[in-house]
Length: 242
Image (spheres, rainbow, N blue to C red):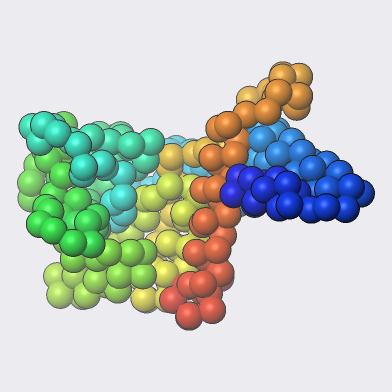
């Protein structure tokens, strides 16, 4: 969206009428493209890892749940404020109740760069306790600040406790490609269980093709941010293709 606004602002200062017209037309084309629900849904479905039917899973897994699903800057502090990524927690809870997983590693430190803040892993633990998952079934990794640290610090935790797996990695579908590569790079063999989908497999009506959508632009921002993050991780050697 910033690009489109930038082009429109640029067109204001163009004196040549043909170039001005071309800039306006180009910005309109970009707007129609990035606000199209059908196009972004197709792009997301290609990037996101497909869902895994629960029936296809074995049993005895230790789930590794990545945080990044709560909002810390909200009061009162007598509850936990979840964002759209709450599926990571809800699906893990379902897998535990269906006896697919025996224990849960919750990986994630404080979201804030500055200031005092409790690790997010502790917030997720509170939710699991409320849902009657026993405390001794959960292990917390509370220092990581990004996906690479999730993998490296979880590996240290696994080694220190002599955990043998199998391990089930739970994170958002759009984030799974990068996360899985980081954990493989760290030496943890994981089965993936994507959650929190942004793509849908429902039928699209004509309005999805014609009417511009603000949600589509927001989803493009998310997807582009993740693709760039994955590319940087690949260049830095933090993640590997899987």
